[in-house]
Amino acid sequence: MLSETVANNKNYILRTGIIYYNSFNFYEKRIMFCPKCGSEYKEGFYKCSDCGTDLIDQLPPEPDNEVSYVELVEIYSTYRQSDIAFIKSVLDGEGITYFFEGESSIMLVAGGAYARLLVKAEEADRAKEILRELGFL
Image 1 (cartoon, rainbow, N blue to C red):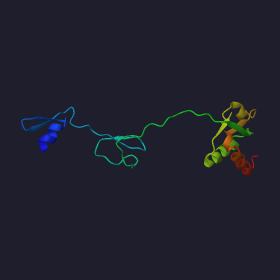
Image 2: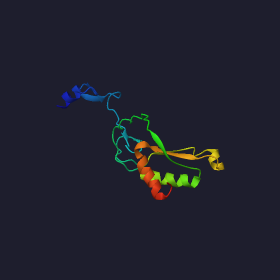
Image 3: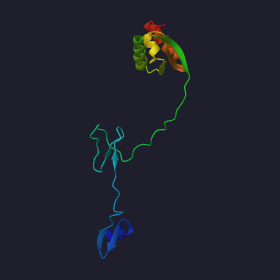
């Protein structure tokens, strides 16, 4: 029966056959979230107006942003900014992790220093092969 259901529900108060609602506990509003961009929406919305993704009622847990160290090895050095820019674009396209040490040095601009290309040790052979194909090695 309705009276039993309502009486068992702590969110309602039963008084003289009339159901009053407890404004403190009546119901918890659900907030919806976009899993892609993190925008918040009131209940009743089902698609993100920013990116069109289906909304969810809980955001996934934050990923652990642990720092991990990798071994980098030097495979190339240059003083030419044009070489650096070209090599960076090729390595980005190939998904190779790299770092140009000394790339922004003032001495590099003046021609007195070299920028060293460092790549992850496990990707060094592949990076060297790419640089060979491009004529840098």
